[in-house]
Length: 115
Length: 113
Image 1 (cartoon, rainbow over the protein chains, first blue to last red):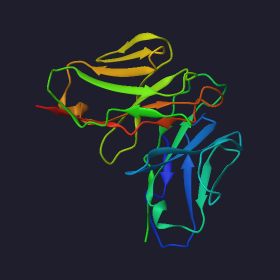
Image 2 (image 1 turned 90 degrees about the vertical axis):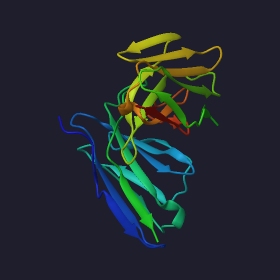
Image 3 (image 1 turned 135 degrees about the horizontal axis):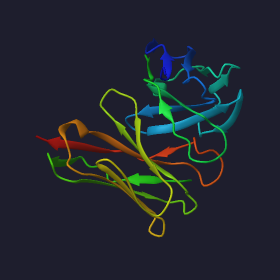
Image 4 (image 1 turned 90 degrees about the horizontal axis):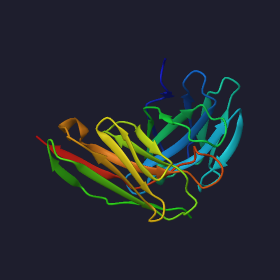
């Protein structure tokens, strides 16, 4: 079974631009969560999508948004990029039903650099 | 605001020794806990999760949970150089999605040959 895929793997943007990152979950998984990882703040939850609906959102500004498609693939968008948005963006997929323990599988991440 | 704290290390142990990684959490309502391993330049991979008080063993790994003390640990027996990585403790909110994880800052483990 194929794992979680994320595209692109590396991205360089300049301040003020916007960026869209893509995540394809494991086949059969309906939940996709996004995380940001930086050396200073560590791993921080951005948002979770399940069945095309955002279920939870972390403490990030409105410049960060996402969506999920009917095939469970998800995209996240960051508008008006700031230097501090440079980070590794990780997508995690899980089966997603119920509130019981759900194992999350992380993708390889997208390394975003903002110049 | 839920907090998950780990002894930041770095932690060095000789090959074959037991590595002990610790994590405390602030939310008494937390029900489950996850341990992830992250190699340098790679994404996190799940090692174990635990949601009952006591010990849970999987091969060389043992997770221990003490809800009264709000403490969770990971023991790695017979440590190998390939265990050298950063270990992340994580917990979801006490209600709502188990997939909204709060991560600790991680403990960097080095196993010396």
